[in-house]
Image 1 (cartoon, rainbow, N blue to C red):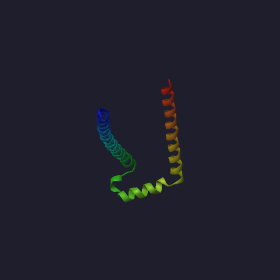
Image 2: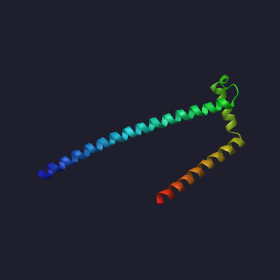
Image 3: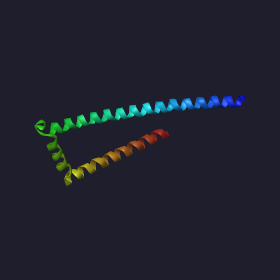
Image 4: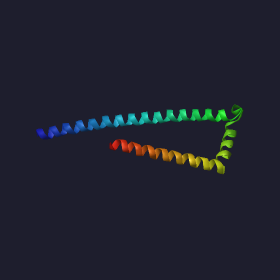
Length: 107
């Protein structure tokens, strides 16, 4: 009988621990989502600044005009080629970094 009571206490303790860890996991996920939102907002602001610095009198253009400009510019063969090259550079840089990280970890 004492063993049964001890097991019940262990079960209760384990369930309590699981609830605490689930709560912590939820908090971490919320923090992560908030951080990603902050990073996205910062990125959008920075890219907006870049765009406006490259277009003379950009403030006089509407959002629709800016969108039309970007859509027409980004879809040209030249822009597609440049974007493809930039993406490839990112893949290569990420691959090189991963290889360097693995080599460091092995040492």
